[in-house]
Amino acid sequence: MSLTADQVRWVAHLSRLKLSEAEVAQMTPQLASIVGYVDQLQKINTEGVKPLYHALEQVNVFRPDALGTSLSPEEALANAPERLGNFFQVPAVLD
Amino acid sequence: MSSPLAERPVRELKGLLDSGAITSETLVIDCLVHISQRNPAIHAFLRVNPEAALAQAKAIDLKRKTGQAIGLLSGIPIALKDNICTKGLTTTCSSKILEHFIPPYNATVVEKIISADGIPIGKTNLDEFAMGSSTENSAFGSTRNPWDLDRIPGGSSGGSAAAVAGSLVPLALGSDTGGSIRQPASFCGINGLKPSYGRVSRYGLVAFSSSLDQIGPFSNDLFGTALLLQAIAGHDSKDTTSINQSVPTYLEELDQPIPSLRIGIAKEFFATGLDSEVEKAIQDALMVFKSLGAKVVDVSLPHSPHAIATYYLVATAEASSNLARFDGMHYGHRSKEKSSLIDTYCNSRGEGFGPEVKRRIMLGTYALSSGYIDAYYAKALGVRRLILNDFNNAFETCDVIIGPTAPTAAFKWGEKSSDPLAMYLSDIYTIGCNLAGIAGISIPCGFTTKGLPIGLQLQSASLTESKLLRAARMFENITPWHTKRSPTFS
Image 1 (spheres, chains in turn red, cyan):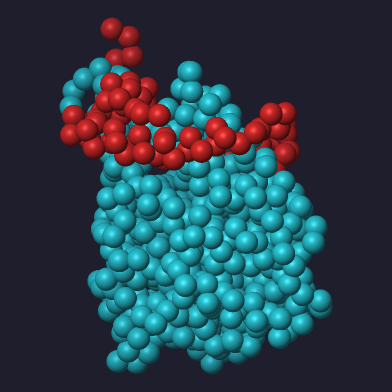
Image 2 (cartoon, rainbow over the protein chains, first blue to last red; image 1 turned 60 degrees about the horizontal axis):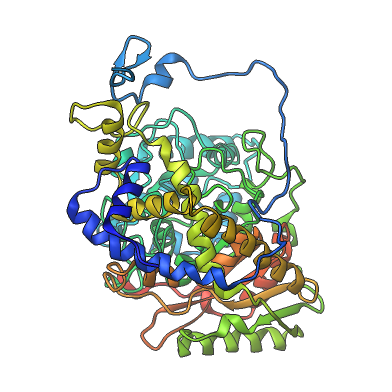
């Protein structure tokens, strides 16, 4: 199937990626060719086949609800792009 | 110029260290010297950590001198792919978005290496976030193949493979999501093992595709491969996908040949696109196994031609979710443009990610988006089950499946970088192993007429690494390929 530049812009928005118009122009045919390639799967009958999310089919791994060591605030904040005291500083979430 | 100690087989190096013939400090210094001489041409390392490595080597030497017990890794320096977190040492994933990221903790494999007296000596180059097959997608420059500097080393663990192949270090760790250890091992003429899914903890490995990623060793001999696997394998409560089963004694079992070994040959691994010289080398390897008394069995993997299509839906879907964490809020690059929260996300990610990562996030988002998820992601999960069933059926009649690791030898720098789909197709023989969660290894098995290494891939059922290594060792024991070193620096 073909993919339009508008679809690429919409997917970029969903992906939270700012793309330049040059990137959109380059990526549209590249993604269209990959999507065209993966379309081969449509021919395979998977009726009644249980989806395989994971090669290990273990579920519900629990650990004891016990206190452990954790990072100090200094360590946790060491890579923060911006900080204010012991907080990560971010752009306003609400207007 | 003296030849590097790291040129010697790991088996010999460990013997020299254990007997006291050389010190760990001597070996570390020798590696640092050869890194400084050779790395400018190969660009395998992004950064080295000489002070910490030398301090650790001296401490291990002191333990040895005073008669204390030394860990399994005997003071051998080890290179780490730069998507493995190292406490206090920058870990970039070869991405601008993590250019200045300093992890506050070590990955479990790093802790295990240190506690076994292995020495993390530096961080190696990769395709950004392990997305690629050539190490050309690094934000910090590409890595070159030590056998031919005009060619790529493979990827995504190209830096680790080139570091071992160029004798800069004896051992390295990589990660393999669709072939990222085995394909560069093949292109660089060394061993590269992808353990079974769940065998090695991924805690501290920056996630790309969580149902596929696995950490594994590179070495110039299978002794080193078994040694490093022995040190890093095992259950980890910090990784809920790690398997809680005891670890076999790989190293002790390595030299025991498998009586009446059954070799599976799948016709799907000898399809169109396979280079004739590669095919000849694989056929020759098969003769070697026959000469050892192995029985050859035809097996069928009918869904394997669809592995790449399945992979590029599953892996990208998971990547689009995993990489959502890079939003410029808690760590990593934040755009300097003052704007709203959403625009800050978009700008930070738009500025920080390179083109291949953007493409894969986009493809994964598309595959998961409303209206397309059933046709793409859900469909791929069904085909993934069929691929696993094929392997399960095959392993009922054989111990290991052998075939080529890659359809060709190393290609030229820039040859495929403008065509993403052509690049993806170079992983055709390695991807099924990740989708099924089984074990796979690439070992050297010959050279093309141009002198480029060719890799033989062996695959075995989940958690049968010991069998896989023993079968590979039977081949290594009577062939010369693993002893060859790149002539580039001699």
